[in-house]
Amino acid sequence: MIILVLTCNIQDVHAQNTYAPPVFQTDFENVRQSDPNTLNIPVENWFEFGDYDGSSTGDGARMWIDNTRAHSGTKSIGLEVFDITKSRRAEFNIYPYSLVGDELSVSQWLYLPADFGLHAPGIDWNWFNFNVLFSEYSGPGTDRYLDLTLIQPDTTKSDFQLTLGGRRPPNNTKYLVGSQNSFALQRGKWFNVHWYLKRDASLGAVKVWIDGKLIFDYANINTKGSLTNYNIVPAKVYYETSDTTPHQMWVDDVVIYKGYVPPVTVLPTASPIPSPTLSCASDINQDGKTDLLDYSILARNFFQKPYTPARADVTGDGAVDVRDFTQFLNYFLKACP
Image (cartoon, rainbow, N blue to C red; front, side, top):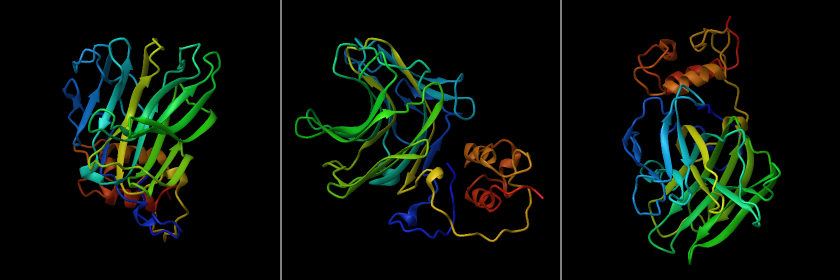
């Protein structure tokens, strides 16, 4: 995701927030577990395992900091339900209200195994819920949430349906917002899920992009209940109980923005910026051009100390911050002289 600090000629009611810097991001390179259910990241978080015995240790589910698979850097977070008779879910909850209020955009990279599929034949459909855009809960029967779910109608075929829906009061009533049949599910490779949410009881809005393609776009819907606080779930393993096969997934590079920020692949055309005399300070990896490879180094080091390599500090002012991104954008996709 590129953070653009530009003046844009666009017709969009959200344009004023389009290029906001993130309020939170992590690539999990320096994280550790504070306890079995939380990470030491600067936002309230909780790993839920849905234990049937009432414990919080995850008798049939787990999370771990994985140093064998990553979208960037060397680490990611792994989630697994390995015994569905003991644990109902493995989910990574974040509570963003203090950072963003009722309007936010989130980007995360997810990985499903190359052989991912569901394994409960003989029922109408199999489902696997992997992402929750918001969730409110104040007691039994009060659930209100909106999630992304994969459905595999025929376990003998690699044909998936993607749905946007959830539950709401009274009595956890199920509802469907939208669906896409024959969804091209990415397996055995990292894919990006980017979404925007405006919480409002009648004027709510939601957009979902997968790998930069807009999949769902809805406005004037109910996306808020009676609670002020809420949580989001960037990654979740939760599926049909008759499927007893263990399931895993991984999450990396989670970024949260306040307001509306679309993914870089669908950014509107920006006004031309006068090109200064080119230097190659923004060519961080020194391959002769300023491109997404350099951006990935910037993003990984954003507000990090120490940062590496030293060239990530494009402006040379001793910090990797918005000024470095601005300088980077001045030279983006231009060759070094």
